[in-house]
Amino acid sequence: MLTSTANQQIKHIIRLQKSGKLRKEEGVFLVEGIRMFREIPEPDRVKVYVTEEWQDQLPASWCEGSQYELVSGNIFRLISDTQTPQGILAVVRQRICERDDLLGIKQQNGAEEGQPPCILVLENIQDPGNLGTILRTAEGAGITGIMMSKDTVDVYNSKVVRATMGAIFRVPFCCEDNLMEGVTWLKEHGISCYAAHLKGKSVYEQDYRGACAFFIGNEGNGLTEALAEQADSRIRIPMAGQVESLNAATAATVLMYEALRQRILL
Image (cartoon, rainbow, N blue to C red; front, top):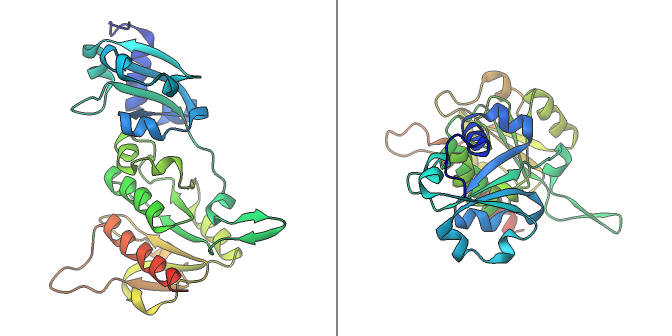
């Protein structure tokens, strides 16, 4: 059992919790809690850390093929990023997604099948809860993939991971060093681009049944004008009362589900 803060494994876990750079260098991230642990694809588990209490309750099949270590309760509280640790933490391999994965088109017998792509383009989203909620909602709304700028909060931040409720393992996403190049790629693939913008037309006046992408901007400043100019159309969510705009995750939800509503009615 690991019982000391001087243990190198414990020190390493603490560094991984704090450093997005280190997570990127090693190609791993951390997952906490029994529910999220169940979501991890078995081949992606690198190592599992559990308290003695959880060792007795954990089904053996969940740890097959993975190394796991026992950790004392006091030490586990130090490596945990939650106020009420659940006693299980895993080191997990990061996903590798390419732009083509965002299209969501499967090949069968040489023919394409499935709905046209519906993609989210996120620019400089900073709140971990927002990003995690967007990923979770994207899965529910049938979004085929998410493209995000490099200055968006680290998708492998522990708060983001928890907020996805497992969607991080299933929704394709990629981080673009140059978001403008990513948008150019979308257009080359015949994808209509819509920018969420206060000066746009009503979101309900557009047709999203074809291949489309929604641009969602920073929580405080919205989209940069440079990115908004790349859109084929600017759209806004109608507001009653004195509210000017919605939270980024909420706005993204409205757009995603309007696209889903239209596609369900096809």
